[in-house]
Image (cartoon, rainbow, N blue to C red; front, side):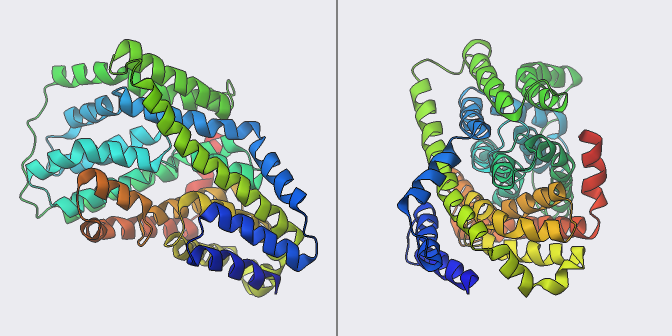
Length: 425
């Protein structure tokens, strides 16, 4: 019955248009009333404790680093370098989009920011070259959602805080699945775009590629610093976020000189708005998470799916389907915050590696960014590229299916994630 109260109060509040953060607080109030322990201090204390976490400092810094990267010209130089390398291949601009998406993912960790940068630069080029525009937009959107899988990832930071798991281990475990997503997208693109009568770009000479690489070397140095520092224990993820911010600021101001002191307030305001929305969600969700534990909802849910506990792969497949369905209605952060305290105890009871589950769960939540009606990344690409949302939805389907297939291959063969993950950590 407690599970029913939780679901009805949460879904009911969101169904009438209550913002997710306030819906989470309302759900917590209803649970407290049902359990006979209503106390406003519980709400205030849990929200304060939720915000007062050193690890969460990484979120505003990584968001600011992404904003500085886009405003300071780092994103554009990465794309220019990818164009110089593979732009001449048939379907080359699509390959450029995914190569750039993977590189940008290792810098910013934001699906929306990366998708906006790729759409602004590459969509006009792909349109002029004669590629199918909705399919090109769909590819860019599908590439953008790689960002929260490859470290540094704000999604892994939020999941790590909610689950009390090592964020560094989550970061390292996400590298191979993220690259695998990019590889499958390239293969899918080459298959579906083979009928496009598109022009290919002129082959860049080795000297032109070298110059493009030199122009991009400062931008390409950021993921090396971030991941290398975390891997070798020099910095924590939070400290890496601070370094990334100052590195992007320095390069934008003094190396590429595309940032100016006048433009900085706008960059800081944009990062502040995004940070405020995410942090309020985190604080509100921790109220519900505490009450989920007090109400023993994981045990109640576990009794419902008891037969699957003995079959870890079936349990993972069931969870993946559940998260795909939830992802059609919720954004990335609320999905993580609502489902983590409910699902993680069941996963641990089934003997599933929690780091493996974390990677799979975040991959699935990212795929939710491509599923209508919410589809945040679809809306970003639609707005930036000035393409009707319905056309973007039609164009993204081949790539959405490809990423879902990758997800279930990793469910069937968890060693693909686990073995490389142990190499890294």
